[in-house]
Length: 212
Image (tube, rainbow, N blue to C red; front, top):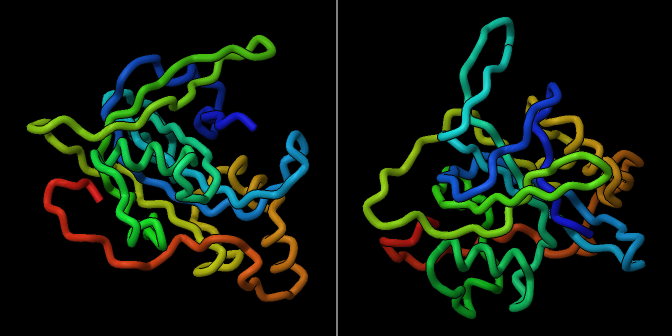
């Protein structure tokens, strides 16, 4: 299943331009356990979203025109297995490998507000052009960090059940509602250990030059 970045919600916009962009993580969504028809199995998915301060867009929010950063996202299998894309991108983002202790339970919520550089590549399918995040790397030393301009968006089935953040894009809600967790919660059942790996709450080793 391709890890496809989506267009911003609310209109037909050109995709984020190709190239290397400074970005700030503003969104982290637990997408739940999703069945992948192509592979015939279910996997726990998570979505990471970034603001791109260097690319702007005007939006109408509660009757006010705002100039805000463009946004882009990428979906991952929620795993820190040595071959997992999530682990590969996080280690590149951090600038060093995870320790054995960290991979036992790394708190992904630490990503929110963290700066990085992302590589965006365009791909065309069925006549439409999509922007894909292909690499995530650490911000170069000496480069000024950007602050978030949008409210942080965070959702975890373990913490929030079915209470998603305000202004969660409809396309993200559609994915969440397709998960086995959502189906069980809306039937009044309480999720348990069968829901796969949690985001984790282990303390991170204190290393000053790491972004998270």
